Image 1: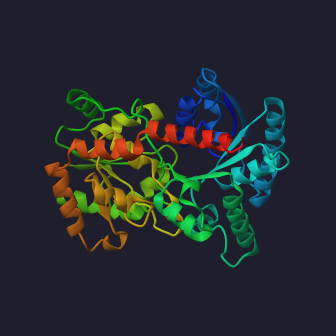
Image 2: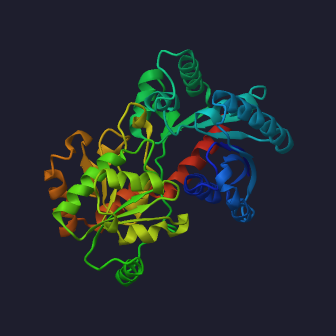
Image 3: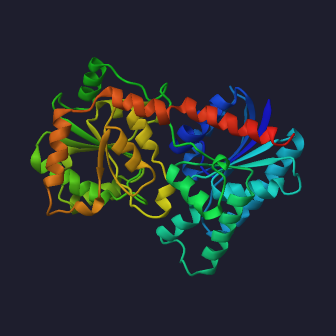
Length: 407
């Protein structure tokens, strides 16, 4: 059984960590022994015992640290040393063969842990172009010294890793062109969904859950799941929702969000949206599928940028698993490829949405009401790209190749 040290800045008590780390490790632990180090957020500590009980059932030994960004780069440096110290202790005790680093900073941590042990292989799981993301979010200045250092360090990690995987084909193409890598060096593994979690409800179950939430059978439910800030262009979403609501009084906006209720309510007032037609609620990870099943469309706009070419929205895979059409935008990862090849939603140029143009809203709403989408299109896309089992096979293949290359 392969012994793998897995490093993640994302916490296992967060929905993202649960869906995009633990869901994979549970299956991968059938053939591998994982020593997982993650950073948990202070507000999520209450869920620690639940995750401990879960991982104890599998070949996963979990160690966690408390995440802090209170002192910016100094907090990051402190956490870097914490993980290097803990990682070295785990490595020496358990004869680690592979370090799986989920994103850039963990890759740096992994590099220092394996620095004096050439037998250990470093797998850099690229979740995005981290340094460019900080520029896009205004956290770094492009001509600043810190940006230049981090950009060079990130590029160094791309070259020093023994294996790379990216979330998108666009990211793979960018890295191949930038570093002249061979095509075999980089694997593409988009964010996937687990069909055992994201299930399909029967017609009767959908109707029952709709009524439980206070909806009528003929209401048109548009859903947004997760955060509405940061990379999300919630303002554009509300402009489109406003257009929908003006066209049809049966349109309702359902928002699954736990921590941004005050922000959302202020935005609803700003865009003059009838709050009686909006439901803001929250859900556990294992219950999200029910909300996706009763919705008629999922709405999420992500601000396009150079760094977002490396991003794959998790919610898109989850929508596809539940046969839910997505309303999203171009300029992000491989979304154009998926939505042009498969009829599973609408791809919108964000510049075409403003409060003076409602033709876009009218066209989409007509198609939502006519329900022109076929389940077989969602199945084709899911089975080709988003089935979690595909990702499990690819990760196991990467691990095996890394160890074969050692002999």
